Image (tube, rainbow, N blue to C red; front, side, top):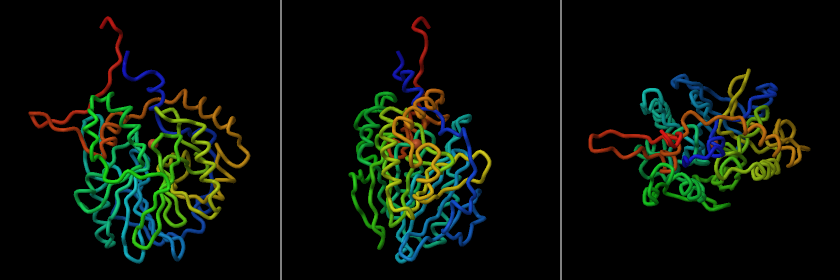
Length: 340
Ligand SMILES: [Fe+2]
């Protein structure tokens, strides 16, 4: 039997549901944030806005191939900054890794005079490779960080890819405990364990902003799948309730966006989520949410970049070691009839 059971394969499918789409006017989702300018130097739009006098400046960069929102959050006073959920480009057809996305963001960081202190992950992504090690080369004094339960994900998938426990030693510079606090310049940051999509999932609270990863999506997209190993729809419901219990003006910056007929958006307020989240708005019961997620997740396929992503991301963004001929290889677990 394959190391991937059908449940595991189901668990590792494609992005969240896009059904029952309802358009929310962009001005509503962005209010009262003010877009100050956009940068045409990137291959995709990026935005720069500040939210209030003592809040971080947030730069959002959309990576279209994986529908990922990458963030730079910075202290406007000291310009100390953190990168969150970066993307390393990978073309599965040719087996080619490139740094096209980070090549666009690195000059931006230099132009803005930002001091990168942290390179953070909200969780071990199954749909894109992290560029953490690319940025670590440019900013060697920055610390890579993820929630401490990444060890659970490493223990699950290490054997799948033939990785010994030693492969994970020093994979990340910092393994955050629940509610751990740290400073980013003058900004106060806190790590919030918000499991359900994955067991290791954390959010980063910076002032009155929260970087949610895949723990919640834009109100009209709703929620992420919960059928990865260690995923739990009840836990995600609880995490979403905790997010929606924050002050209503807090801003939630999502890790992906999958719009059907509107531009990609990256931020909403807690109040908007309470009123409009299509899977978990106020009044939706735990049993209703769990039933919806189980039904929806049961028909989702595996993410296209599943195996390359996990093999890279559980090692903090390190690619496989080169063999004697200098080649690198990703492994793909194979299921076949016993007589073949
Ligand atoms: Fe994810």
